[in-house]
View (cartoon, rainbow over the protein chains, first blue to last red):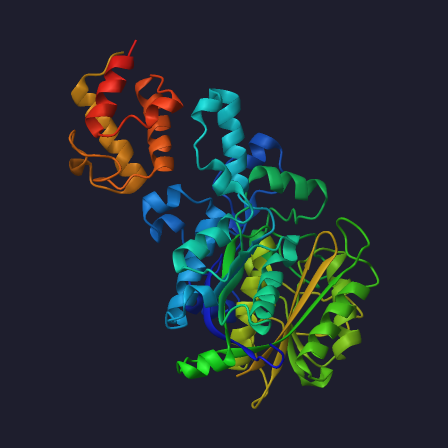
Length: 410
Length: 82
């Protein structure tokens, strides 16, 4: 419906900084790193050049009952944990199932399930494969579990766009409400890919940091010594709601999801278009969608994965769209890169930044790239202006997917 | 090795507990998987798959639907032991 305002009434996450929103936010403001050396011998056994990653701070087994764990890949477990928190945070809205939607994305799907099941087939034969293997490995498994759990009958969708997936899910959720298909949507992204196979592939692409002697310092967006991203895992989920529906039930509103912008590079299956043209178009589209001016945007949570090629392209695109005055945070420096969960976790952090008027820090930037045309928030959090503020959350993915989400203070 | 009926019952109860969370003491011979233990058809296939591995027997897929009660399963597994 034209003119429908979409607000965020619930936030949830489980990620390397914390098992919920409050612990995540305080760790982010404190500039903590969620990256550590892994407690397994993958690197040695398989010849991986990395032996570190950003694992979830709270194991699902400490949160979910064992029979439920057994029926979900870790990626879906994270999604359900984050969705439960977001739903409770929203006050468990009473909404008919037909007016409740779910959009939960992943970049890969149930990578642990699919690879474990193949091992079983090879080693023990087809009879030993568990019947739920396919429902657990499919990329829509997370959203299907969320839909079933919360009775979301307006539609359950799982956009797959690599590392833009989580943000694209939120964009799709906004569109569901605007188009009148739903009053409330549970939206977010999840990933659980800290497994030797994806690590091997990303390493072979030279996309991963190999700073094994300093895992906590390995994710260093915009630093001259950055050498790749650090694999993370976890989920971010928000509850989106039409402003009208939220007001009618007296809901507490965290922020407004004022604009979405999507584009594709149509350039390469992996690296971004080096001109940043696609990223720029996504950001401009989000601005246009929101009706705001570039000057209104005071904060950006950048995609900024800490790869040598990617960060500079994005920084230039941000500078072209917004100028050089917005405070830019690169929170992957602390969380690692959640792939399909990244855009959603970072949206949660962007909503918090707008609500709390605080831009989280970017850690590990000891020597910023020369000629950087953005105002990077380093080391310590920075206060954002009082009064109405707007912030942009960027998420870009392999294949040239670009998503920008524009959040304004409620 | 051959398992006694009691050992099969105990092992089966552990599998049902893993799958459903039901306490092992509730998994008694007269219980119906569907009506009493709330085991759906896919969970029943999972339980049968785990039981095959645990007791080193074969439970054909088409046979699983006939195992209505815990005793049905115990008896089938007992009879299927080589």
